Image 1 (tube, rainbow, N blue to C red):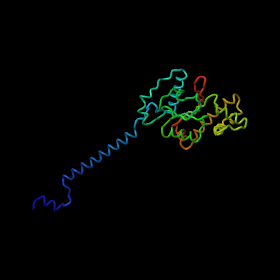
Image 2 (image 1 turned 60 degrees about the vertical axis):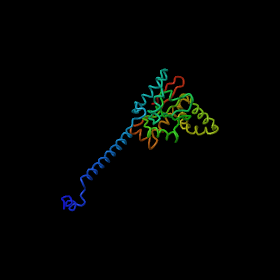
Image 3 (image 1 turned 180 degrees about the horizontal axis):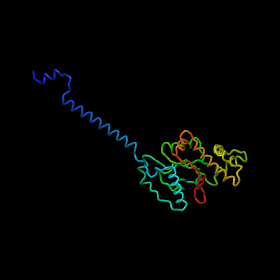
Amino acid sequence: MCEKCSMDQLHPTAPSRRSVVLFAASALGGLMLADTASAKDTAKDTKAPPKPQNVLSPDAALKKLMEGNARYVDGTARRHDFKHEREALAGGQNPYAAILSCADSRIAPEYAFDSGRGDLFVCRVAGNFANDDTVASMEYAVAVLGAPMILVLGHDSCGAVDATIKSLKDNTPPPGHIPSLVAAIAPAVKASAQQSGNALDNAIRQNVIDNVAKLKSAAPILNAAVEQNKVKVVGGIYRLATGKVELLN
């Protein structure tokens, strides 16, 4: 009997050198594929945001917002070219600020803060109040889009606030669905009723203050983000005559 046959009889299940080499090559290939997949997953997770310049701290975001307003007031707004941003923004968004603004046609946050596409996440409703829908929208902006700040933006001569004052004074509800606006704004009107000065101005300011407080305390998303200093919530008044936004303390 030859030596090879004798060895095969002694070790009938022993793998051949060729099978060992093939097994090792297969295992190495599997590891390489796994590493490649892992690298792809990591690259996907660390994909650069559409607008890297919008990745800011809450304070830096507020500073950027107000610098834009200063340019708007001075008439030195920048030229924003959507063509060169279109491809990046088609794949996602990372606004640096979320704004709850009045729906008044004279108020346009994108213009007022000299912003480009993908910079601001804006919700607009007459009277700039936070209801379930707008709170949910702000939660989305913070939790999903990563917006580091929220601005509640009121404005002088607000028709929704004025209508609320008149409705409460005359005890006469307005027509249609407008009473829902009155109901939302009424707490601010009542809270400011005893303040000295212009009743409309006081109510407008109080309405902004109340809705800032409402967003700050909205559980479980916004209040946690505020407590962890991941999000800043502030209020401001847009002045129609100048375009200037005055922040409220």
